[in-house]
Length: 268
Length: 256
Image (cartoon, rainbow over the protein chains, first blue to last red):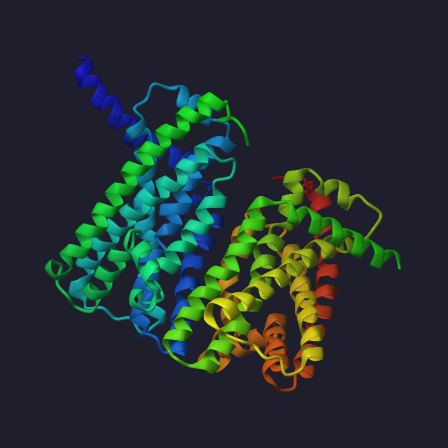
């Protein structure tokens, strides 16, 4: 019986705990937050860089729409995840949460799942903005392929967000990490500047970050390429995401143990 | 004299508070450099040295707006969270004299962003900005800071009833960068954008700084900046009275 109960209990923590955490801690789900933060901010980011691209003559609108529309998934993947984990500290629920015997993998990964869905919606809205307001007109047949790549990229980005969120167990204010992390992605992942135009060390850092390969794949698919021709990029993106999820799990366990030892889980 | 003293002391206290916030401090250092670096890489790729100069000056002013928009829109909310809003509203001084130094301090922090961006551009990207009219440049910068600070004041009063005001301020960051011509000339936008740009002091501020640095007639943009700053100040002061009356009537001043 125990052998059956444990996975079921883990699944319940993963799905139900994840959804409850999203509803309870992700305060941006209110329309007064969600619209300016998750829709307006990404939309203006896309417009800003597309116009900057027009003036600098570096690339066409499609380059900036795809790059930024994929990258804005980090609003949920990085900020959202950081908020759901860091929020436990603010609401003083972190210590009781970590006192439970719940499976830690299910506990923390469950918090990431709603943000993957959220990031996908934000990203899709970004593409819609590009389609309606800028010169971005991908073939209709490319949309399912594009959706798959965005989903993989958003998941990878959420793994990175969990790494950032893990610092919420160690630091009082997780946003000290999440804000620079978001902008690092903007700079290093080839979102607005082609990777080839960056210094060599930045290319190396960028190739180890989430979204870099996903954005490159999405650009090719939006230009009409098949999924098989970008499969290497998509697999790289998925692998990088898996590495971040693993790193996040290890960091969360480490910081949990350290938080207990230092009695710092309730500090705000 | 009393009003000036209040503004000066309030500004000083707010500067001290801002300088002790690790969140504001770290972001204040990194934020403008991220955007400046992205812009520099983009313009460097195009091999257009004039565009690179244009970007250096524009991105340096971006930081002034960044340090003001989010912080100013949530200024009253923050006082609510500190539990000090009722106390400062209850003081005999006009509330606008308490609020203006707060938003002015936020825009003043942007001077750091400006200097850091210009130095970043100079030492990492080799963008040397030779200032054609140094005296007018010295006038244009504080005028822009003042005007953006007063725009922040008007913003903070306008969104006081909006409980998630910081999100609104955050969403306003890119649009103002865009329509004020910080990095992209206004000629690239549709015609309907121009009247919006003209009503925003940062448009004239960045124009004054550019013309003072690169050559031109910066006095008119400086005058427009001062005029708009005065308008923001008057509009914000009038609005403060209405907002406070309404908040007192509905007993919502301390609601978080």
